[in-house]
Image (cartoon, rainbow, N blue to C red):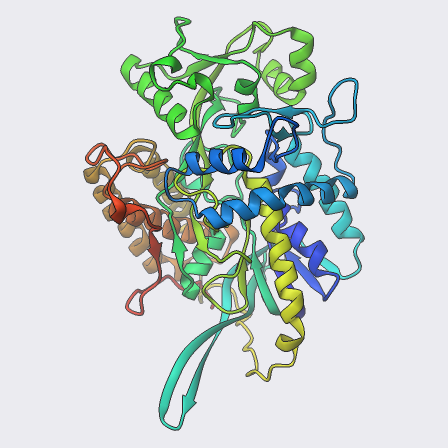
Length: 551
């Protein structure tokens, strides 16, 4: 079955929905999402949106904080673009109906502060900002007649057309153009072809590559994997941000304790009640995330404790229940009263600072393929994302991409292109069965433990080399056994996760220094000018990759 649209948007978070609403003014839009449309990283974002709105703030200060956090690898022109156009994008959210918190007694925004920020500039809706934004954007998309939403649809691979321009017998250049994607209808069990003039990847990150993560189950790096298989350039995958404070409790899966809690005065302490961040950075508990995460990791390893604690019991109880109602309710349900009890926390994989390499309009290295949000590497975050810059980035680049695509859409529609082949509808190999399904569960668990132990907050050359050997063995097993297993979302996600894990390891092995989120004990210092550049990876012609069963 073929579906034809002007725009194919993969992902239903803030990046995909913002782009879709703008693109729908110039053409038809399909939004494909592999779970429920609300199951996105955006929906789980607690903190807020960093934006210059305060009287004592300035663009220069926000730019400076972002550059300092990025530890030498931010692209200054991109930082400037995002910071200076951010307020206009925020106004658009307000006009759509997002209700951000206001200061008591006036109509100005209540702005919080998070680690690395020199001013209060975090726009928030209680402690559920992402959920408030996602709800409004989804409602607007559902009401737009030019937007069709396909839930429980998983992209398998991009549809790439290779074109050569020739003069006589001489090939001038080879151009790869994205024409759409092959999409697996998880509920119906069939593969469909989606044709589009533009494909936009907004698939989020890959936090599920790690044993402990703040991300939802959908964060399996699918966009990174399919872009890489298609031949797109990816960059800076070694920079995985670990959020310092994920709730430590056996019943608390993926629950984040927002950095805004530290912004309101919470202190990190050990189980003996000793505050320790003053030993690691002058900003103490409001230091950059990489510093705080490494400090907690060090304290836990030195003491042998399973966690540290976040203590905000000195603040007024009424203030805490109003400022952090979601965190208060969730912790209380687990027997932790944050107004009286310190909160047990551990670091957890949180955000990919690298991704699909794009320009200032979100365009990738493949014609007609764009990437926005966490799956993209725009140059904003460098070696370490500044807190709450991610939602801002998504809005700014969604706008830039929509403007560029609208300008080029007519020329794309008028192209004469070869027919797009159907993807085989048959699922799985002959006589396939579920007898090998145990391999999926085992390798899922093995990859996540491997990445946590060997490619985590603190790394060594030996552990990275061992991790690469192990992950390549897993890929060999998958290649051999995949034809024997029926196609499923678990199988596809495992394939994507294994590939992304390998790419993270390869990038980490390449960078022989410690910078930002990448800390290697064997190379503890920052390198010189030679390392002030992005780590770029691209599939070579010699590489072999897994083939989906039935495709």
